[in-house]
Amino acid sequence: MAKIFDCITEELQQFISTQHLFFVGSAPLSPTGHVNLSPKGLDSFRILSPNRVGYLDLTGSGNETSAHLQENGRITFLFCAFQEPPRILRLYGQGYTVLPDSPDWNSLYPLFPPLPGCRQIIIADIERVQTSCGFGVPLYEYQGQRHILVDWANKKGEQGVKEYQQQKNLVSIDGLPTPLSNLPGD
Image 1 (tube, helix red, strand yellow):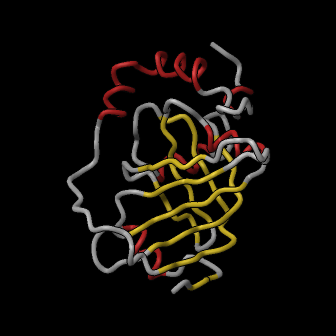
Image 2 (spheres, one colour):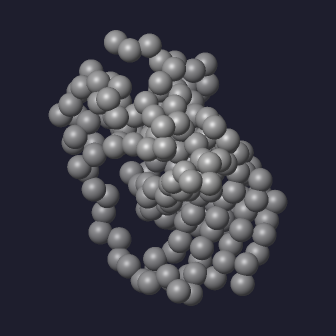
C-alpha cells in the first residue's frame, strides 16, 4: 500500500538510479487545458538533494512541461518498476525551467550527459514522495535506449535545432507561452 515520505530516501534514490524510464506530468490552471504526461529516458534524470531533482530536457515536438511550470509550477514525476520487485514512486513538487543563458546553467549542465538538442533543464523542489505497490504494472524487459532523437538533433545541427524550437516550442498546445518565447530570435 501507499507510503508517504518527506524526502527521497537513500533506498528510493537507489530505486530511481536503476530505472531507464520516467514520466513527467504537468497541467495548466485552465479546467479546459490539456494535462501533459511525457515519458523520458536517455539517463537524463538527476537527484540533486533529498528534496530536489532535475532532468535535462531535449527538444521535442512540444514544450508543455515548461509552459505549465511557467504558469503554475506544478509537476509530478512517476517511476515504476517493470521488473521485480514491483514498485511505483511519485515525486510531487514545484518546478521551474533553467535555460542555457541562466546563471544556474553552468553549475547544473555538467551533471547530465552531453546530449545534442538539449533546450533546458527542468528543476523541481519535491514536497511529497509517495510509493505504492505496483502490483498491476506488467513485467517488461529493457532492451536499450533509442537513439532517434539524438540522431535527429545531430542531423539538424545546433542552428537547425534552434530554428525548430522557434517554430514548435514557443507556446503550449493550449497557447501558453514557454520560457523559450522570452528568448530573442536569431
